[in-house]
Image (cartoon, rainbow, N blue to C red; front, side, top):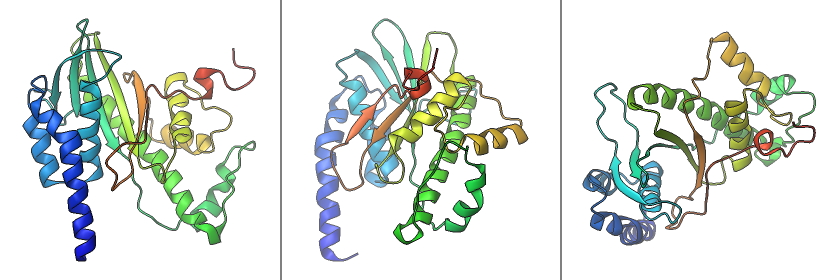
Length: 257
């Protein structure tokens, strides 16, 4: 790493510290804030930065009042933790698991050619090999696989964490807006909440076959999916959408009852 890049990264960490970490350090509602802040100062991966920013957005949300907040609270019934747990006015507890999806840049052109036969007849993925088609397909496929994997992991953790029906869970998927996009999560959200894929979902047949052969059945104990977009090496986030709702849920497809 040359001196210029090192200085730019240092300046970035200073700005993130000032904008996002310092407010957390002063907020007494965040009962174990040092746990998250210490992790950020030692490990500045996108996942940790996303957690820091989301903690701020929850504590200072104008749609509800956050009364208490905890990072990765201990659960005697599980060795795995939920990232953000907070209580809001009215007595409800929200469990928010945060997962950053950033596939490695791998050329999967041959896989794309072989797997086109699994796409539904009314869908098409138009890619060109010369224009990073193999890498784009790898990102799309890997992101969808990660959504399923993280959802199943979160469902299992919720079985241990949820102690009453007032608890609600949000699974927040984070990305940089390049490797995958909001509409891809909308497709997955449709399938999760309705039990059927929308007609434009390219990965519907592969996903159904994968789940069937492995006897995977959703518990459907997640109440909402969220989308959080934040580019690496930027201080501010770009977009947050919660809940994420696809065309089956919103009725954007004609003929939906």
